[in-house]
Length: 493
Image (tube, rainbow, N blue to C red):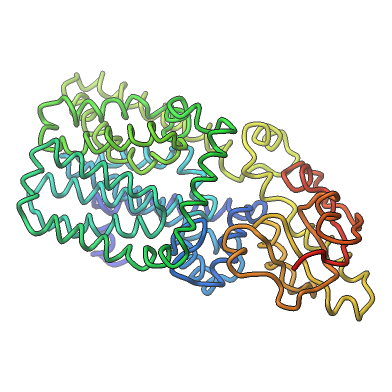
């Protein structure tokens, strides 16, 4: 190691980079435990059909997925690598926010670790979803906003606009953050920037970055609005939004970091030293209230917390400096012990570390279904292949596969080619836009349908196999879609 590299690694930024590398290493060592998640299978398929838009999300996540496929193939660790990098890089910027607020190395490290042990962020480092990248763009936007407040240099609006534009190209909830920032500007002395060209250039830049997806939505009758409206209604109907406030403390942040969160809000909104950064406090409050009023899911707020945790860490550090050295050391040690216990406790539950069937697996399976939805996809492909290969050669050559959801279609298109299966089609999300099998097969293997559904679609339909997995894990597929149907004679086009 050169002297320059050694000096960098000893610097404050170098320490933050080492922490991020430790995060990447942790996830890379554990991300190969089960299989692809249902949502990842959809993104894998979309990554093979690049476009400026998709029914379920904007184009950035499939684009990154395509890069991962090109570099790493269908390796679990490789495909999830960029999601891991996204949440780990956000750690660095959380520490840098603390630095902009006046925090030293102690406060920067505390802020970075506090952000990293949030359960939702631990989860998003272990699965490839748009939430990971949305989180990074949100943290970048708040970091640039802190730099703007600290320096008074209005040119930072260009960086803010770029981050928000990338956010909108990743997940539409970034629009809530944009509204929160706009309201915060109007409510604080930051409104002075309304008289500069930089704020408006930043806004224009965000629109230009988002424009390709906006045009795609216009060409497709804003299909994503219909999709999101349906998903939102489903979430409300199933009660997924009812515990929004409680889950903020349990999942959006770690319970061990709740004091830092409250301290950070106090710093931004009430403390004299935080007056210069009041725009961050109002950004948090307005955006949070918008999500609450809109009945959003708890994890929508995740990008808001790093800036608050950074402020809480700085305020905590300043308070420690007022204590006697011995007392300060004890309080500091207690804080880190709480972070350690909170991080390990939640990490064991939300990281893919438990072997299937182990006592820890049994615990995590009762708490959430994240890991259960990563089991059984190769078994599904093999079971379908057995049905397909049981057909006479002439019928097999013209047979097709229709699935009931994107996970099934994604799995069969991932593992099916090696088993000789034709391309599976589905009527959900962007699979629907790609259309049905152009051969119009009259013999079709149905996955994810009930027998009654199959008989409505075809003149004859029967159960040909069962959708089971080698571990006996009960998940949506084995529980709700246990039958693999063989059907003939399509009743309608």
